[in-house]
Length: 516
Image 1: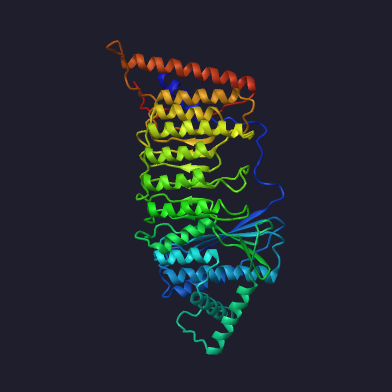
Image 2: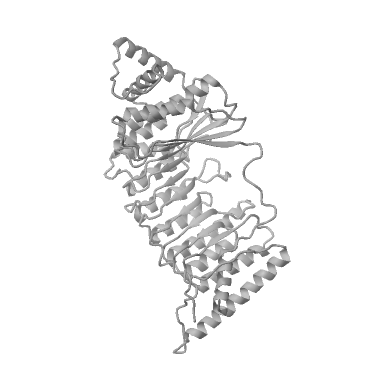
C-alpha cells in the first residue's frame, strides 16, 4: 500500500470512527423477556380458496403457546404477503386473528401483564384503496357488520372441526344468524375505551401494505388515514386490553402521493390537540412513492413543525421514523424538513432521505437546522443536545463537501447520533470535516453515548482542482496537501483519544484504485 493510500485510509478512519463512553448501558432491562413466534404463508398460490389460507393462519395461531413472565413480550409475525388475497379476505383474516388471540388470552389468563405484539405482513396482495380504508377504520374500532358476521361464522366452523375442509360449503340458519348478531351486539356493548396507563395484552405493532396499487385513491381512503393518524384510545373487550392502531405503517411502492401526505399531516395536527393518552402510528415508511415529491414532503413537514405534543415538555417525538427514500424529494422538501426540525426539535427521531435529489443546499439546510435545534433544546433546559438519532442521505449524487461540512457541524455539537452519506460526492475535504467533528466530541465532557458516521462509497482521493492567481495546481500537489492535512488530523485524534483512554481499533481502506 502506498503512502497516499495509507493517508486516505486515515481519512476513512476519521469518517467511520465510533467513539463510545464506558458508561454506555444496554437499553433492554434485565428483567424483561422477549421471544418471537411466526406464522409464514407468504407467496401461497396453491390454495383454491382464500378461506383455506385464513383457516390455516387462525389454526396456527390457536396452537401457539402464548405465555410469558410479568412484563414480558411476545412478537408474533404473521406474513401472508403475495397470496392473492382480496379486500374481504384480508379484513376477515385480521379480525379472526385478533379475535383468536383475544379469546386465548381471556381463556388462559396466562400473560401475567405481558404483551403480544402482532406484525402483519399483508403486502403484494389484491387490496384496493377501498379495502385499505376499511382496514384503517377497523383498526379505529369501526366494524363492518357483514365482514364481522362472516368472520364469526368462519371461526365457529373451524372450532367445531378437527381439520380444514377445502371444498365444503357452510350454511347458516336464520336462528344462528340472530344468535351471532346478538353475541356481536353484546361484545360491542361490553367494549370500552381506557387511557394508555396499564399494560396492554394485545398490540398491533406493524402493518405492511407495501407493493399494492393505491393510486387514484378517493376521499374514503384519505379520510380514513387522517382519522388513523388522529389516533384513539386503547380498547378493552371482555377484560382484554387491546391497542389495535398500528404503531408502524408501511406503504412502500404503493402509488400514494401528495394528497395522501396532506391527509396524514392533518391527522398529526389534530392528534396534537387531544389528551396525552392518544395513540396513533409513530413510524411511517413511504419509500418508493415517487409521486410524493417535494409537495408531499412539504405537507408532512408543515405538520411536524406545528404539531406540538399536548405536553410541551415531553421528549417523545411526533414521528419516530419517517422514511421518504426514493420519493423524488429535492432541496425544497429537505429545507421544509429542516425548518420543522429547527422549530420543533422533538418532531422526528429518524429521517431517511436516501435515493433522492438532495444537493448541497438541502444538506446545508439540514445541518444548520440541527445545530439550531440543539441550541433550542438547551434553551428549554434539556440537558441532551440530541435532535436526530439517525439521518440517512445515501445515494444523493449531488451532495458533496459543502453539505458534508454543514452536517459535520451538527455532529460536532452532538445533535445527531448516526449519519449515513454513502455513495454521494463527498471528497477528502468533507471527510476531514467529520474528523474534526469527532475531535470536538471527544473534547466535550457532556457528550455521552456514541456517534456513527458512514461515508463509504465516496471517492475521497479526488479533489477538484482550485485555481490561484490564474495558475492551476497540479494533481500531485493537491494530493500531497490533502494527505498532509489528513495525516495531521489523524495524529491529533489519536493523541486526544489516547489521553482519554479510548482505543480506536478500526481499519478502513480507500475506495480509490491502487496507484502505481
